[in-house]
Length: 561
Image (cartoon, rainbow, N blue to C red; front, side, top):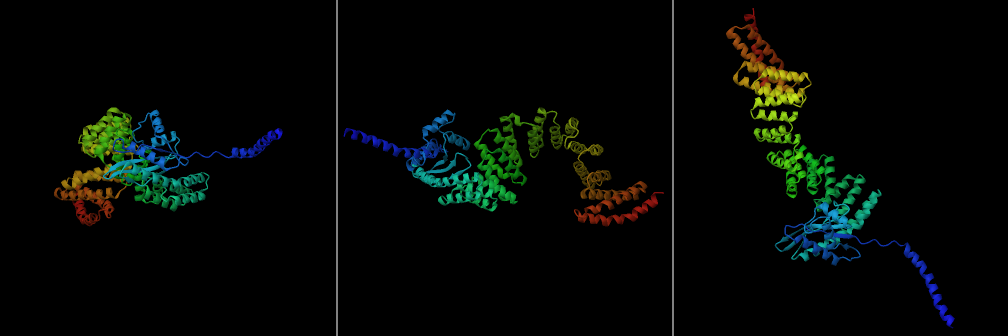
């Protein structure tokens, strides 16, 4: 009996062991459940001291109360503050976008909530957004929440946050499918996520990415516009709109998207350069001014922001602001005071007063005395200020340093022209042309000098001025043929002929009669070039020239024996 009683338990234990073994094996093969995702609530931005900290505390407490801990872990305030302190950050100030992402990654958060808070006449207003820690451009703005108290507003934010999270599982599957290049399946998964939360901008971005991979551009644009209606700061949507509108040559909408993109991502220097270049090339640099001024307020004294602002003001032709910011820039970063800085800043100052341009370029020349381009800018500034003797010295020095400096001989010729030394002007232009100078630029210098001489001669009736005009205008046309140079040369020659024929009659002069005949021939040859641009004047001259021919021929017959 005793044996029976003893053996019975043993048998139970043995059976129990047999029963347990298979269960233990099954349990061992089952993977442990994934831990719940973690959310970090960072200090909110606010103009009122401590309100941002109080808002984060209230929201952290509310989400902890509203959501099952098995579904979501709210990272405690102590963990956040300890990490901030260890990293040398303030525990009472709102973090910038990149710093918030770095903190979330250190705390192994999957997502974080940030935003702004302000007092209203009736209570408190919170504007929050959820950001994925893996990519802080993936953001979901939550509806503005107002309440009579901070807790009431936080409760509304918590409710909106839980609704927004309904898209996350689908978005994660969409991203995984896209990585596997299963783009059609990714589209379906993203749509499924949106069926649970129709305003899900994070899921929409994945949908747009999948459409882009499928080369369905119209769908990409449609989704991007849909995102933009919810979140005007969404970087992915703005990038897509900018690229698509640029490709479709819709300059207005492309510019609007690029400008908004720069405002949404102000720390992206490459993007800012692209936007400013695009705006400047389309004559819309002024649209970038409010954006860069906001960046200046947010980053006072920052050399990179100052450099960008300087370039924006130059492109927008806000020269006074460009000079002010430029001066701040080279104080904040002495390396920024390179030759390009002085050249561009002096050129901007020249639009205001020649004297200011001269002061700035003198600083540059003092620092870089052997830079030919700077010396040439100095020559130009001095000439515009009426100091042509000093300008001549600077221009000669520039050419001595670098005989091939761009525009060197042209500037020298203009200075000689201002000094009323036409022979030197002609000599410089011809020498420069013979030694590989830019003929187009030299032709423009000759055209300007000839045009000035024509205007002076037409007013004064000075035959010497008019003959000089013909010489310069014909030289211009030889360097680069142009209708302007031809017509003005013909018009000048006509006036020379008219003056010579009248004086030849009084003095019975054969040389003057021959000058008149030669001049009218030059006029007859060149005036027709102006029939398009100077139609009325050209027609009058072409009518008048033949009327002088009999008289000139008669003078030559009588006076030239």
